[in-house]
Image (cartoon, rainbow, N blue to C red; front, side, top):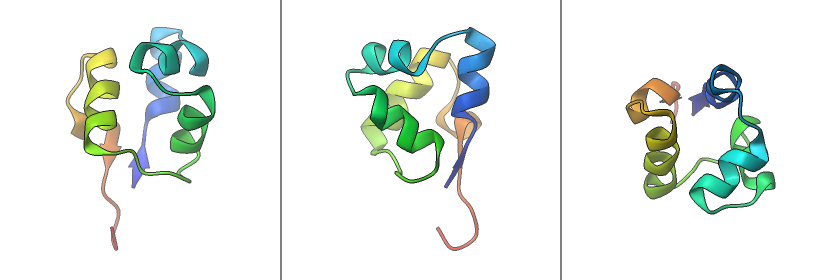
Length: 66
């Protein structure tokens, strides 16, 4: 699953730590999501989308084979 999390953070000018605190996870979790090493749960994806005031599909995109 691809994501635009790093870009969205840059647009809002927030750090990984800021985003992590806003949704109740560690900064390392945000880093692994951004690096495409971890696919967030539905609840976590929805929380992330809420922070950026965008639909989940605007941040996360399925790739072939997902």
